[in-house]
Image (cartoon, rainbow, N blue to C red; front, side, top):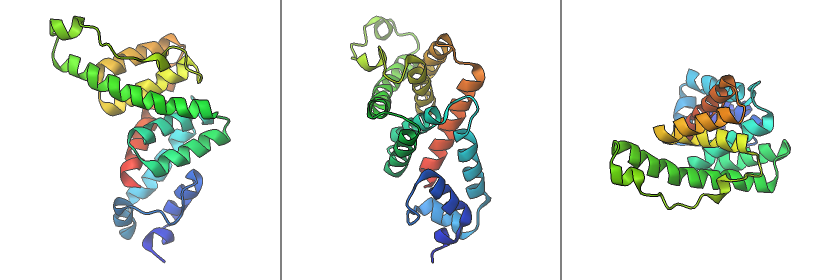
Length: 196
């Protein structure tokens, strides 16, 4: 039996997320070989953030899905899709999460460039010319779509998009604790992606 399959914390995490117990990664194997406390922290962070009192289970899984898809982590993408569906997410909502990831990657690069250029008149006044119809009336609801957009913008490091989506999320009625928990969940899933 490998060190990974002997590590109860890893097996519990994989079971919670519906991940094949035979799955492994170099970082996880290295950490398991020395019984790293970081594995326990990761497990506690993941379960703590997925159980936020400020989001439903479905919402938390959809936020987690967006972070995993953004990081192109297929194992976690499938895991969070399955968990979201168990909580009632429709195929349309799952597809919309992926569409949100796509358009936010476009927007985050574009608006980060504008920000980096520090008020260049041409760049700031010339229309973006980018199609973003998925943002108009999302099937998951505008509030959740904006929350996911905010999390992705934070992960991708676009200050303008973070500021804009944080404002929009509040306009949709979200509290600061809800926003804070969603950002923490995105951060934890990003950490999970680079570990497993």
